[in-house]
Amino acid sequence: MMTVTARRLRPYLAREMAGESDVLYGNGSLEGVEDPHPSEILARRSPLDKPFGYLYREMDLKDTDLPGLYGKLFDSILGLPRRIVAGDGTTQAAEAARLSIHALGRITDFASTLRSQLEAIPNGVAFLEVVWDYLTREPFRGALVPVALLPRPMWRFGFQKGRLFVRTADGQKILPPAGKFVVYRRGPAPWGEAQKDLLYWVYFAKAFLWQWWLHFTEKWAAPTAGAQYEPALVGTEEERRKANENLEKQALGLAEAVQNAYAFARPKGVDVGLIEAVRSGSISYAEAVHSCTRAQALLIQGEVNTSGLRPGTGAFASDRVAQDIRKEKRNLQAQDLSAHIKDTLLRWITEVNYGPDVAVPRMVIDTLAGEDRQDLRDGLTDAVRSGADVKIPLSHLKLVWMIPDPLTGEETVSAESLAANPSQGVAA
Image (cartoon, rainbow, N blue to C red; front, side):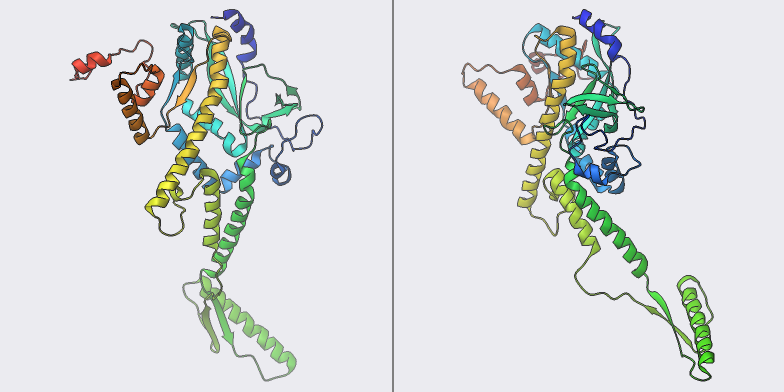
């Protein structure tokens, strides 16, 4: 192991740098000094009294359909089997893979860490602070590995000519050491491309529709009480005016009593009735809100059928196509996430402990469906029976047959011995 390099890096990597402190920043306030965020939505619609980027979080708080739709996408990715495999067949690559498995297995709730990185899909970019330290126990004593992975808010960061810096509460900009922050971005720009920018106006219209729907419900869901009275017709003009004001006051008081009280007394000559809301036309607040939610589902998941937002009745063919679209979108996101983890955490663990010449392990997220897996199994069986000189990678064989890598020191059985004695390893 390259312990000399590890010891040189440790003082810069073993402490936290970017907690959720209050750092206010409006896009454009440091124009010319740092790279501006490309989002016009954040620049024009963000609350002035909130940290930069808070608008994206506010959208989740005010429209619960958004975190629900994203949660379904994230859960479908995180629910897939994951494993780390060696980058090649060398001994050092195999050891680097075992170290990576051991190190990441020590991270508390690693699935939540991956979920925080998936926030780059709606927000364009996601930040993860890495706290490093040495392992003090065998079998990897002395190795430098991540001991904590901490999600960080975007308002703690900025970019200057594409280079990341940490923003402090007093306005300072600190350049972090390499390997300190994992930055997962969606798109080529430093800040990525936020999907919520495309969703914003649908979200805005939906919030407006909800507001007017509630206003309509409050005003018209219950009938309005109305009171009628015979106006005074005798006396002088002043006497009639005063008499009519008194009658109107009594009628309004009676109408309010009808609307709010269990019992009321009706003066003679004053009639009370309930006025029902009557409205014509095809406008429907419920349908308009539903249309906005369908638009959100279409952008986030690629289809609406599996979200329960399909209009009308469905069909088997339509549902099958929708499932295929959902799986395709999930698989592409899973492949991108696995490549991201390889290029950051797994590469750093390997290079700091074994050097740049050792093959970096890969995180494999198994996206194979049952029918696809069976087709691959049948193909492998046919290839072996054909007698052709086919060399099958062990990692591929394990993936197809869903065979996990054993943990360090874990007892194992061979396929041959298990075939000879199927009850081997089964508790009585």
